[in-house]
Amino acid sequence: MVFHCLSIPYSPTKKDISLCAFVQKVYKFCEQMTKMGHTVYHYGHPDSEVVCTEHINVTNNDILKSSYNNLNYWQTQGFNQNVNENAVKIFNINCQKELEKRVKDKNEFILCWFGYAHEPCVKHFYDKAIVVEPSIGYDSMFAPIKIFETYSQMHKLHGAAQQNIQIEKEYVVYPGFDENDFLYKENKSNTALFLGRVVDAKGAKFVYDICNALKQEITFAGPNIMNLPDTEYCKFVGFVGPQKRKELLANAKFLFAPSIFMEPCNWAVIEAQFSGTPTITTDFGGFTETVVQNKTGLRCRNEKEFAHAIQNISQKIDPSQCRKNAIGKFALDLQCKNYAEIFQSLTH
Image 1: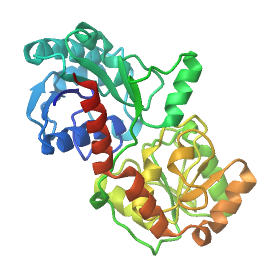
Image 2 (image 1 turned 30 degrees about the horizontal axis):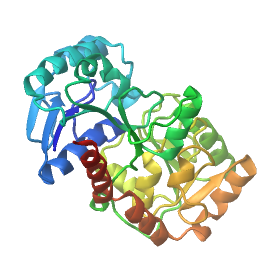
Image 3 (image 1 turned 180 degrees about the vertical axis):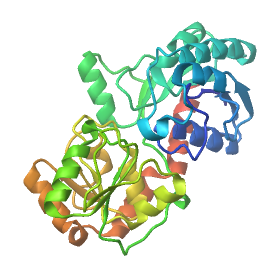
């Protein structure tokens, strides 16, 4: 099969840009599908470090600077995902030109990894190729073929749009991870972990307040967008790369992810499971699929339940069960197998 992968307009595709799930999705898919023998075209930034059949430059640092100024801004502020930025528009214009040179058959796939942001480009190819949104973990959908990150996200978007599901055109494929990218440990520290952007929607202020109140030590790893100060129990270390991320996940007493918005999935809770680390989350959205209650973590509905979970999770959750669930449900080879089956069914 032939895949044209439109990458993320605001970033090179690299494994060490672990803050952005969009970037990691492109990186993993290109590498795995190329290894499986498929033809993979990667459209993106020249600094990308990705395994593929051919890399095509469609952006550069000058284009990114025109929209984002400092190329490393994301390490402290998170990524600017505004689809109307000039960098996104130029990305799409260049992608369209390069796709016109390479798309040869209607059974080739154009994969829109940044969702609706790619629509101005791919709308010209609906009758020339199979246009797919391969991992919908955002709050829009547009492509003829839609693959969602979780059933929760599929249900959320269709409920909001009041649209019926299109049989043979809509699917779910869970995220996939390489177990060798994680360090499994059964003996944990007494310090919990908050991993990701420190924003209210992720429950960061709630985590901060309850951990201070209960004297639970916790490390916040991610851009401190709320500018919360260090305390005796809460420490902020900013963005961390893959190695530090691996160590924090493996050593954490638990991962704390009480998001108050409808999480499409939340990769961090899955990464924690590969590390043998239980999670404490809210009880809705993607967490209902990624966190197995009383087996890989505790999903809570009020402050009393959160307090109980913080104080008792180490006795309730077996690290080996976390790892077992992750390997059985979120292994990278299983994700690729599911993708391959869907794409094969779509060709004629």
